[in-house]
Image (tube, rainbow, N blue to C red):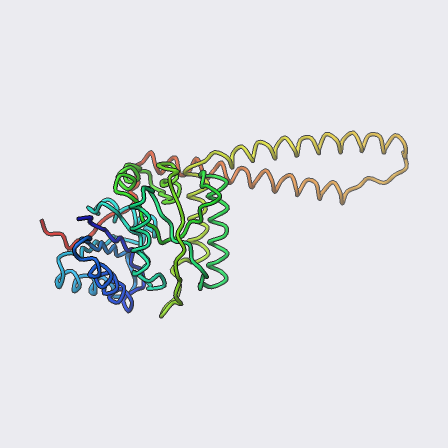
Length: 310
């Protein structure tokens, strides 16, 4: 019998998490002789009473395990906490808002059984807000450019992976986990399956602009030095442009001695080059700052409470 671990980060889902759990149980019951399951619910310091709901669900069903983080560490850190505690042969990441029907997880499981290490659900039609779709697009391009994502694989928050992949991922102990970077660092044996995507029943996405920016920075600085290489290339380009401009200015002054000094263009170039320099210094600063935090061993997450009493 194959054991499936559903890892579900919970944030602002007091009114939806029970229906998601019920859907999971209903789906597994259709293959009760083939599949066993556990549901790992990670409360990422949600502002509502979702932890009380998790405690109640856990008391009613020992296959439901709850973990409460001491503060909001973010979805990817909450997933890492869930992977660390999961015991299944196949681990499925599932959102807490019900937009991805749990019934679609059987498609992922069947595809994993064909020999793939990771299977991502590709939504037939996304029913997110325009802001969330934009964030997904940027995340996709970043993963292709910086962390080696195969171009024929579309990443989403709904995916299944083999246990060995999760065990390899949780070996990463630095402060800024980026789940998809860890996946593609572990394996390239990934594939998509097409699934349905439902409208959000209640509430709104927990991803604000600041959280999306933080997630992108994790991907930029944790798994690639390409931003630093881009900074180096831009530095050479600006130096070359500056050199050409100096030659042009000298020739222009020789040919037209009475030509007034071009203060406007000089100031514009200074502002442009200065802005580029400050931006590149900011990228370097991000690397140094995150390196400093990692050296000081800031935790990915802290579990404050748990339903596991053993």
